Image (cartoon, rainbow, N blue to C red; front, side, top):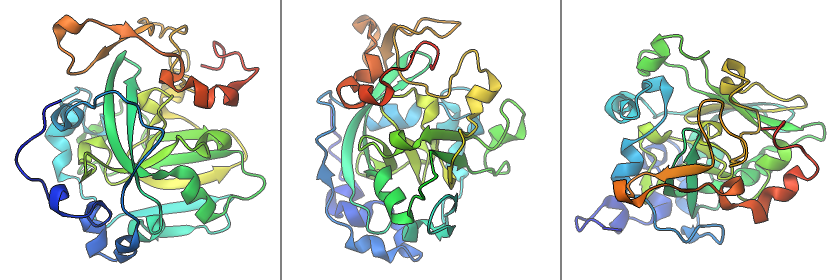
Length: 298
């Protein structure tokens, strides 16, 4: 891939300090003590897409349905200050300032495959920490079986929310064992920079063996529950979007095949490539679904 010669702030600022300057300036000073960013053994060896590709081609209906809409309209979203409500079956419920919530987390860079249900994909160098670390910090109670997430609702800054194409707020969920898996990431940056607004700033979920719609953005609420939580696209079109959303080339979307994918940025001559079961992470996660019918539990 081609790297810019122009210096970025991340070239001269330690990653732990740079990760989110806005939160550090407003009471997130605990992040100053975060360890240096480490390379993760979970990263793919594939070359990442460029920053411009990752930041310029997104699904984020809060800003519009076209792939270019988020980059065009998300810049005005206010992401500072930011709080996250934590409730349900946890030992430490409350409304947390983001800097306080994520202080002490071990930050890593993880280069993950990111596959959208429309059969396109990217390779993205996320920066973040294991969701399990956060859940352990909050204290998961014995009865918890699922983790539910909720996105910000702010139609004056998120113009897509001014129409009823989806039932706002956007919500998602994971089984607790999925959430506690070491591959499951809470991302706060990419390419050595804080997350761009159009990629889910300031905090989002990344579950690399699932389709992109499962990876909820701009999280404002995390709930632990004993019942399966609602999932926006599953509510809207259950015949097309299941709760699990595991990448499975053998289960087609009703309107298109999922057996192959188009890599964004690969060029028109590159053609399509075969979709990998569990997005290529089968060795790590297949055991989570042992004995399940993955065609019925799609």
